[in-house]
Length: 128
Ligand code: THU
Image 1 (cartoon, rainbow, N blue to C red):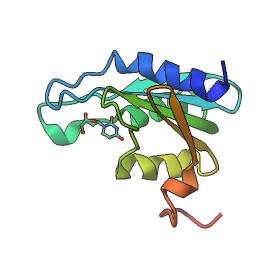
Image 2: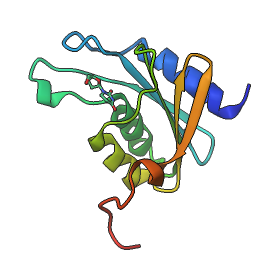
Image 3: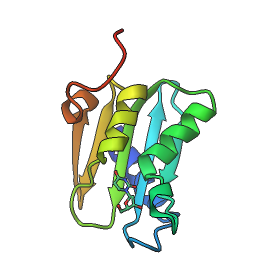
Image 4: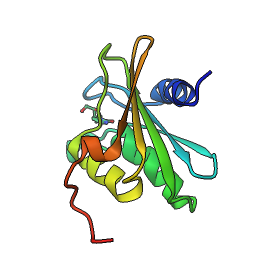
């Protein structure tokens, strides 16, 4: 199986752990680090809605907190039947940790791959 498809399938599995009693919208994410490790994430909601954390940020925080800041890909999955794109806050976090990376979204058997810079052009970022 192709690497992008594999990462998307892992995101689909991660979705099963979503804690989404308020929205009912389960999301899974999987990030691949430069050294080949995969970290998964899901959305974790809270009755104080603003405390909710998206699947993408859960996965990225897991990688970074384990010392892996060099993230090359992130796949995102939900049950919506449509491609699930990262929200604005997640695009900002993706820009921080994987500005040169790829974002993988899927729908049925179809996979789409975007450069992070395509989904977050002119990101708010320090000069490098
Ligand atoms: N959500 C994500 O996990 N990722 C996104 O990029 C968009 C939104 C979650 C947050 C909330 O738990 C639910 O989807 C509905 O907004």
